[in-house]
Amino acid sequence: MTCEIISIGTELLLGQIVDTNAAFLSRQLAAIGVQVFWRTTVGDNRERIVAALQSALARADVVITIGGLGPTEDDLTREAIAEVLGEPLEYDPELGEHLKRLFAARGREATPAQLRQAYRPPSATPIPNPHGTAPGLRIVRDNHWLFALPGPPNEFEPMVREQVIPTLMSLTQGEVIRSRVLCLCGIGEADAEAQVQDLVRSANPTLAPLAKLGEVHLRITARAASIDEAEQMIAQMERTIRERLGAYIYGTDDTTLEQVVVNLLREHGQSLATAESCTGGLLSHRITEVPGSSDVFIGGIVAYSNAVKQRELGVPQEVLTEYGAVSEPTARAMAEGVRARLGSHWGIGITGIAGPSGGTPEKPVGLVYIGLSDPTGTLVTRHLLLGDRQAVKWRASQVALTLLWRGILKGGCASLSQS
Image (cartoon, rainbow, N blue to C red; front, side, top):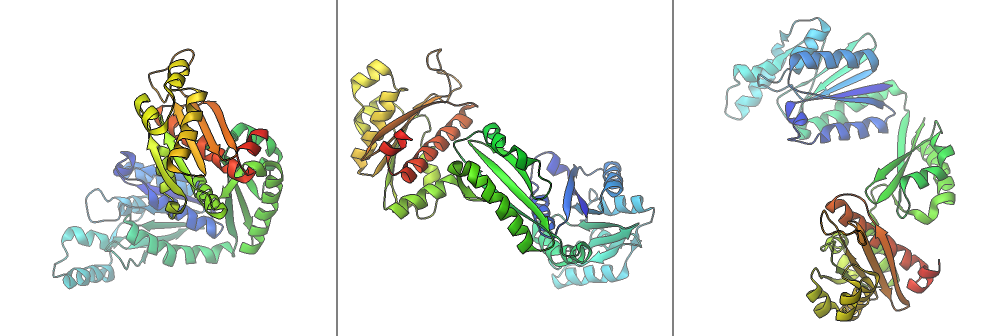
């Protein structure tokens, strides 16, 4: 069964609000085996809403509209649906009385504008809205299902769960769709895809590489008659992927790299301190976003100027003079200095040129050195990172977390440098 979601509202096109409703609905539909092949966003224009509905009904088994059912003049979904159906809008006395009772309970009288919500095409069945005034609509026409739902999430989500999903479940015969995302770091999208190219061509389960800033995600999706069967299909493909790319997989689904690192530090009874220049505290911020990070994170020093690098981290003046702030010796001194000054097991030092200015032919924008230090030694890596200032900073923090993740798993910098 295929579905198209039509989100209605000019505010969506202007970027004034984010369409969280469509994302929520897609997840709910996937869980019962309904495939969302198209998502359309259209403004508050009757002619364009009609065109969107006509296209959707021509190609999808199920069409679900979001928004445009309220009492104002720009709420045009009812009118557009009536036009597509070739039916007039008619006043529903039961809906009208329901609306009047709702407003009377609030000590108000339902206005003519509010009573617009009591109109519907004759072939449409009202969908109760326990949390708002605008009822939804359900229409069946030529083996196509059309649902119209209000836009406020507190009204929309319960109506999806309690009205739409049960109806569609009775039509899908229990088929389900399940997905799992494998999260990788330290490898690019092209290199990761090259190692699973044969799996990408699989029809069921499917495998889709997803590029993220500083990491790669591999999404496995299975369609089956039951949840258990779908999970087994996913597990089989996951085992194959881990055999090939296991060294790069740090987690699954919504797990973040910083969460994994904090948990590993806690498991090993180790602590961390950071010294950041070009990232400006971003690495420390990401770590402290993890609940319980105070168990392992000692603190961080944002050493933006050379004077702070010298005074707070003990970076020698001769290193800064001979090699510069953006250099391997400086990153090494920063990592070792913050570890010694704050008394942590691990120390990280990051120095680089985030841009957009400040680069030279010898040291271009995006050049970053990352130092990692522990009792077994110090390792410094050199990177040329792509993107604007924000992207360079994020990628640098991601590389630092990746380096630390590998260092913990390898048992220290000495072992990491030999691998």
